[in-house]
Image (cartoon, rainbow, N blue to C red):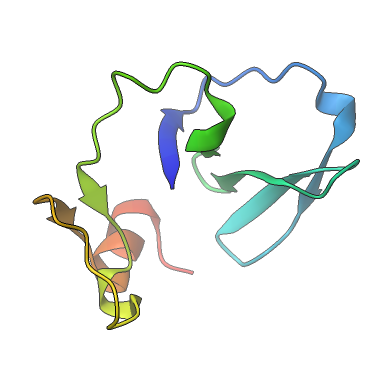
Length: 97
């Protein structure tokens, strides 16, 4: 799960991060030391989607959207009502791959 942190993101310890060019539309950031996934960044907008586990205070987060819902495994479903976006809808929002 990730939090949309927008485009104005500053990272402490950036020297410990490596970025992988994962697709035509996004790149992913990982810790150089342990390999943990930290974020993905949309190339066109520089919008950062940061792993929720990196935040100490998660109390005010609201799980309101699911993306690529048409690609989710059939064996799971979250109980709360969310805004569900398909792959097509995501690419229309952020630019196609």
